[in-house]
Image (tube, rainbow, N blue to C red; front, side, top):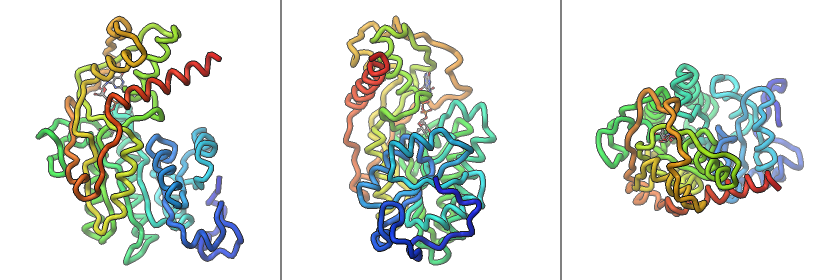
Length: 357
Ligand code: G4F
């Protein structure tokens, strides 16, 4: 990993005289579009890095903390990503990271993204998921100058709709967050719009509805369920403890959703877009389908309701209207709900079987 703190600010990479920079020659690097991704260790960061690398981008990823264990995972899974140290809680480190990487596009996917955790650590959540957006925008404003060539993507969230005022939810639906996470995301969303309007930054917000994959963390309900289903199928455990099965979510595939992020930054004008499938399912349906995908019909026998997994305030129903994204970006989700559940269950069965072998 490259360390920034004991160096004087380096010259932008296109001014370096070295023969090779990362995996590219100096000449090649000059022609490559450069992306800078926060949240590189997460599901979305990894899919986005792969997408951009496939398009010929040079990709930098922000890594925080001391001996961050997940940095090693990224380094082996995504060897083309150039990791730079920095933290969304530390403006100076963001300025240094942007000066070092000289990005054309910045994708802010870093956040405390687990809603349940945000109730337990609300101040940390506000600091990283809310103020972190402000710090990154300030860093872009200071490093990019005026006119500012850096394009910015903010990972806004359907959690901002919270206690929904209308269904389906669109870019114009009023916001009513129901968690510290949702409130922090509202701040980040409005701040992004404000920097666009105040400083003319090319700043976009993607209001993404839930998006899942085999790379999803096991704290989220979908992966928690598919992982448990695999273990139950193989006789490694008998039940899974869950909270509210009645909540409804609009679940899509993360690999489809990162394409929308990239498309937003290729438009002639910056704007905000809802990204969703337009279909909603109860958690109960996800659970039933996941068990069925593993050939288990009596799912209720394996599910225990545990009050610990209920939240102080719940978002009961989310379903997005992504017609603007379809019209302007030409974006549409590719993977169906059934396919998503089946893919995640198949992946987790493979993971558990590999552990047994
Ligand atoms: O999987 P979840 O934890 O995702 P949630 O809260 O909808 O948030 C996710 O999607 C947002 C987009 O709207 C993102 F912004 C956010 O970062 C995150 O990716 O919970 C989904 C639903 C909730 O209603 C929850 O109460 O599942 C319910 N649930 C029921 N039992 C559970 C459980 N959730 C979790 N995590 N664990 C349970 O045992």
